[in-house]
Length: 127
Image 1 (cartoon, rainbow, N blue to C red):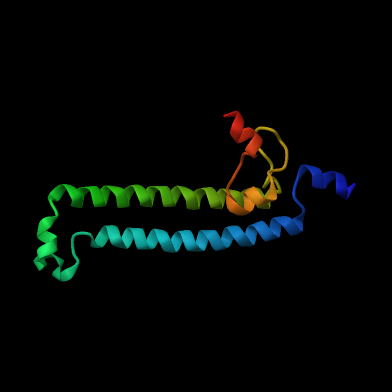
Image 2 (tube, rainbow, N blue to C red; image 1 turned 60 degrees about the vertical axis):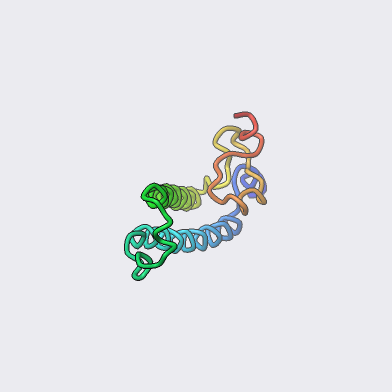
């Protein structure tokens, strides 16, 4: 009977391994987000940069572009963290690693590379 249920979901041991991977990725992603945010906050105030000749070469547009790209990076990073946290919820519900389209298990290698994946390669290719 236990073998049968493993076809529909990953074992508790597998789920524990994925949880460790995800927790590590969340921690790194949050550190990266802090770096992005601090770069964003410090864009306008980096001490002596305003007196250096290279600073004068930058026009207003590039400063605005830098802020916008940092903002986009921060938004993307926050979504990544949210997706990883949602994956933790699926682990708790024991639905982690099940393709939401086909209902089949997502390949373990795919989950190791993209731990927040909710689609198998098969389903992804159908899109």
